[in-house]
Image (cartoon, rainbow, N blue to C red; front, top):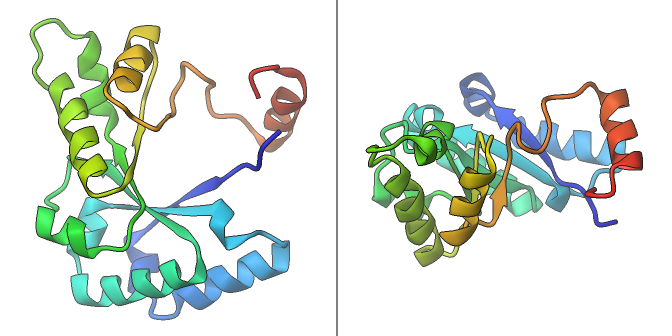
Length: 172
């Protein structure tokens, strides 16, 4: 099979640490992890706080080759100007918009389409969070979303159960 990418949520506290990039580089080195196989996910809300300092840190993390994603996109107060300045490669569409795909009369599902189109215009990958039904998966695929995650694929698993799933399930 192919290589796996590890997504890790980044907290506001970690963003406030001036040398967090050195910590990330050390962890990759110690564990033999290729930086390009690591994706750090930061929420729009965390980005809004101390933007100048956060931007410098994110640029140093990007220089390591580590991927960056905006998590829960659409739920914070990120401006399009900020989105164009941050060195991210992926936008993760919040589960609230994906859940709306199954709701009759909701217009929120159109946000999935719009965010996917916007991300495409900026050469960013898109990932749909919270995919739970085949209809949601079909919708996010139709609109051009690159990746999807959610209970449709698997519930969260401890490491040993994940290893067993990867070894036995032909989808992986």
